[in-house]
Image (tube, rainbow, N blue to C red; front, side, top):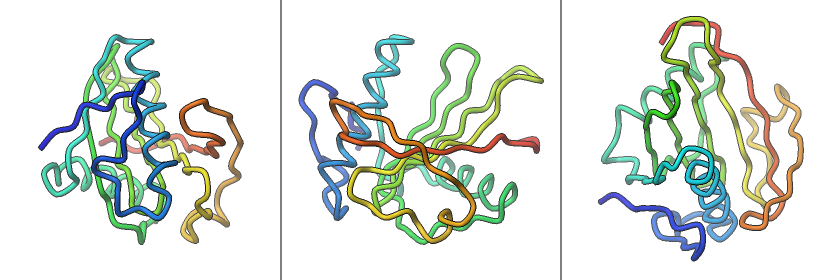
Amino acid sequence: MPYIVDYEKVSTVGVESSPVADALAGLRANEARYYRNKYGHVFTVHPAGDVPDVVDRVSRILREERDIVLASRPLEATAFEVDGLSMAYVFYESGLAVNVMYSIDDGGKRAVGFKLAEGMEIPEELAARFKFARQKSKLAGVIRGSYFVIKGQY
């Protein structure tokens, strides 16, 4: 069942099994606020099992671009289009959020972003490959993030 993420009243609905559920819910709400304020988009997530195509696409891009296979279980996912960008998000039980930004037009921006919920360790699959910058958020505390540019066609 889809869940509309409320960034004014943060809830752990859908991410309760995460050891950092409160922080992950805050991270998810932070993303919802961004898309609502910038694009007027209502950020809606689905249980990962209900949208396997989204999870599979994100996993495929990680695997084919950087040989990354995440060990954590996906909890929720979403995909949508805003302002000429195809966006996909997967929220993992560990507290990791992965997003794929893919410009619909050729030659546009295409990247994978990683955001770590406060309190989680950097996943082993990412630790040696990426440096994570810190950002403060009222909803999510301290978010650590990194990204890479997508080179292939998906």
